[in-house]
Length: 100
Image (cartoon, rainbow, N blue to C red; front, side):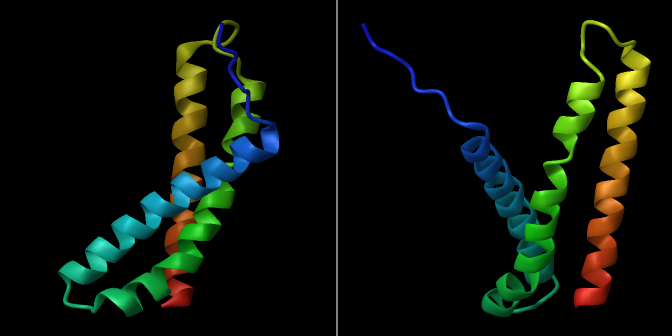
């Protein structure tokens, strides 16, 4: 019989931050590279705002705890997640504009 290891909350949070940071860095580097920028400076410029977005994404767990799927209307869930996604991406763009 095989047992499954469960991740602690801290380890899961680090994986989440890493995944969001990697995705944000990759998309940022791709768009900068498509405009003619070199890869190494693009990565160096994209990493700090992407890391910030990774930590901002951790706040979504509070929304998920506050609005459980079984007890909340679907419209409320959709509005909350769209609003928080817009706020997170707005903060990310604002960070990009001040960083670059």
